Image 1 (tube, one colour):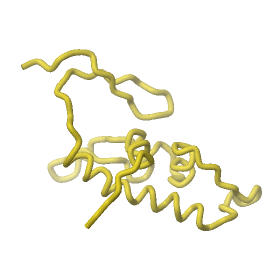
Image 2: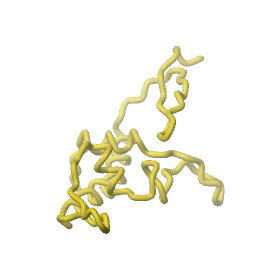
Image 3: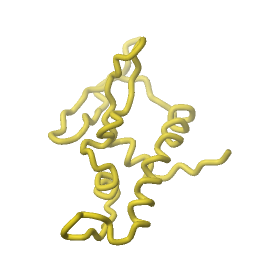
Amino acid sequence: MRFTLTEDHIKLLRRAYVEWQDCETGAPAIDPKQPYGNSCVTDDVAEILGIDVRRCPHCEEALDERDDERLDQLHRETQQALAVILAMHKVKPATYCAVRKIGGPDQWEEVGDADR
């Protein structure tokens, strides 16, 4: 199987809401109801990626159904993108500090070397 990791996938995963799911033994997870902060995933994907989707002013449906299909496909591809990143990305051991973002997930900044 081949997968092309794109900058769009990385942008989406950087905005994902990661939380602790306290089911069974627990595990980190991306919020399945609001993965990017709002309940309309395709609108969030479009906003994050700067894609203009023309919508009906009355019902908010995409005027071109292919737009929503493309946005949904990008969202679904984040599953494979995350698997690739976790398997291949070089992570630097260091101390990081969460920077709170109003209306968005925490952003992380490196603040020092890891204690060894």
